[in-house]
Image 1 (tube, rainbow, N blue to C red):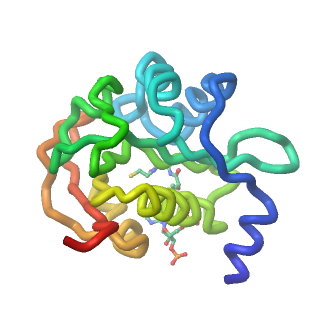
Image 2 (cartoon, rainbow, N blue to C red):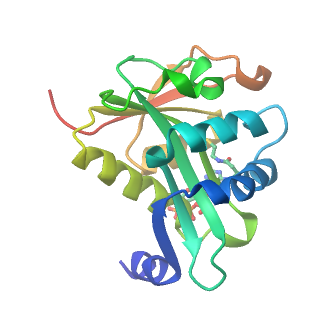
Length: 175
Ligand SMILES: CC(C)(COP(=O)(O)OP(=O)(O)OC[C@H]1O[C@@H](n2cnc3c(N)ncnc32)[C@H](O)[C@@H]1OP(=O)(O)O)[C@@H](O)C(=O)NCCC(=O)NCCS
């Protein structure tokens, strides 16, 4: 509770603005190695086409983005790598969300910001009536996402970055 209070005092959570595109591109490059990072063009596409599924945490002191979580909506039931590279697969009323990236700048880590981004994102999409949120992650992050309420579905149908990924999902509504 104390952690959440401190986070809400320090950060503003909202959709990304178009003029923050360059910031997001740089943050992605800081957070991920080149084989895993979203390309500049793909990031531009996501922000121009799906800003409503791009949640940012802005440091109230500096006005700069400290971290973000982005995704797109679809009726498809499983993750595939094309979601990373083709934002036109987004269907605004899709029942499921494919998460594409959780990024927190190094100087803001280990304070609960990643957790807050995920929880707020899940809450927002639950309120929109989405069914499920899916993501892929490396083995070392499975425990973290389990803490956030996701269930490990085993090895994903993904060859992103030449690595082996787990698919994880979180059901937002029953049925
Ligand atoms: C992973 C990342 C988003 C975590 O952000 P953060 O703000 O430091 O996370 P939080 O402080 O909210 O931590 C939440 C929980 O996740 C766990 N966790 C945090 N970073 C972790 C990491 N690198 N590996 C494994 N678990 C981690 C913590 O144990 C913590 O649980 P606890 O509070 O019970 O100890 C951040 O380190 C990052 O941007 N890394 C580079 C990009 C990346 O790997 N993104 C995720 C890709 S799937």
